[in-house]
Length: 87
Image 1 (cartoon, helix red, strand yellow):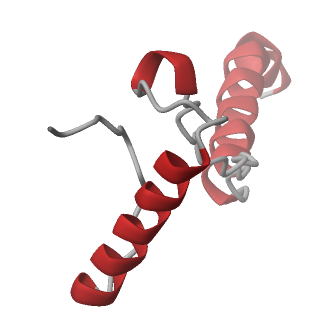
Image 2: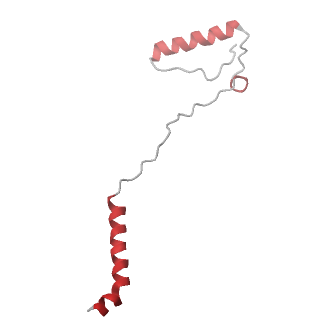
């Protein structure tokens, strides 16, 4: 009987270790990766997106008034993306 145990002890050890590894992997809690929630806001370059001269006070006021009126009509967030001169 002892010869039989000695003969198959390596196989039994491998089976026991495999079973223990299976149990460890099955019942461990999965690691939750920390996800940083960063909203990428587009960077606006005034020179490239609109020909609005920030030194021209009348043009800046006109664009602000237009955005306020649009907000009052739609009741949504309004963002001025580009400005161009009409007429």
